[in-house]
Image (cartoon, rainbow, N blue to C red; front, side, top):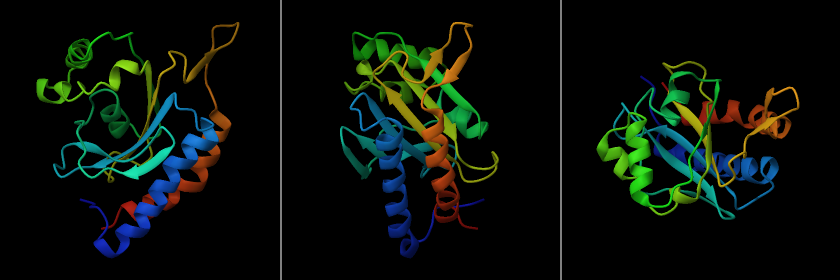
Length: 190
């Protein structure tokens, strides 16, 4: 099983990851405060992924105590963990209370304990989520990009033929092309 890098490598990995979430936020979403960019990796519990790096409201940081974890195959970050390379977009309902957020995520199959952690005040504002597994296959150390949007149509555009296309696909591909090999190299080791 692959593990997180040793301490000596972790500072360099931190810099790469902070730069990555910043580039996604600034180059793909023009630094808009309508978006929150998070990078998930395997957590202390190897059966879950948790957020480790985040860009939100103009600031990128390493998270010291992640609040949430996703098991494999559960919406939506856990799905991206199980099917790397596939883009998952989840359109969220308009929430009025934290209780509605918790109930919604429990309805998606998350445990009560995990769903309760969505009661944080921030999730009420988000209307859609995009997740993409950046690791090569599901047996590798999971690296999942998650972007939350306050816009209902934050990620998908529909053209007159009712075909759905990923919004900002070209700048997203460019950032991924430049960073994914480095993320894989510096976040994983045998």
